[in-house]
Image 1 (tube, one colour):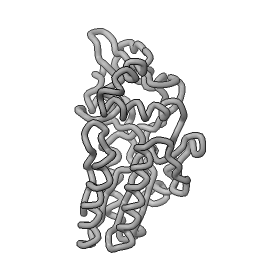
Image 2 (cartoon, helix red, strand yellow):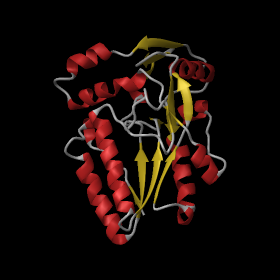
Image 3 (cartoon, helix red, strand yellow):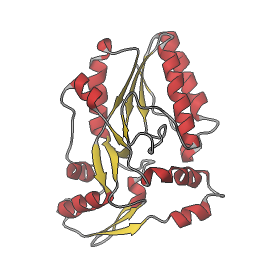
Image 4 (cartoon, rainbow, N blue to C red):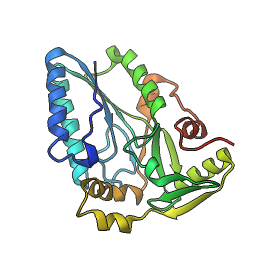
Length: 244
């Protein structure tokens, strides 16, 4: 079994992401290995598919989405040549920092409060995956791997929450107020010409301007009950907030 957890630093995917995956895909083909691959939502146009399932068309509207689409096509090819693929698609991550994800960027603990910088409308919902829950789901899928097709993709819904709901959970759990501020996209725009990582972040801005959620019906049909840690516990256990 091969768990694919490689991601080029600083969002620098252009000349690395697909070649790196190809190495693992060829090894899996030759040895008949199962590849565990974490998918994301970059492959989709939120105007076309605000709720993603396994049949949703992939029409990416950004370069990173195109790269992700080609990576999944490569995995589908590998599944036809001796490998097996289990893809678990997720939204944003909640995991113990440091992590290249949104939460460490937008949530800051101050002495007597928390500051939450919202990258979009605070009432728009986003999909968030708590990594320990996702890992448990992967383990459950691996146990059923003999029953799965050579290429099996699943959607992990996780939490469907808005920034306003996230702020409310933080306040109720920590007992401290949350100050909501706009994310400084203007500053990111200034830095784009100089930093690859910032260009990568700016490119994904559209995901905060639309709801793009995940339909986990297939996953629930395959596994039954899905692990779901409470959002409050996930935030505390990951170290983002302290319980009162």
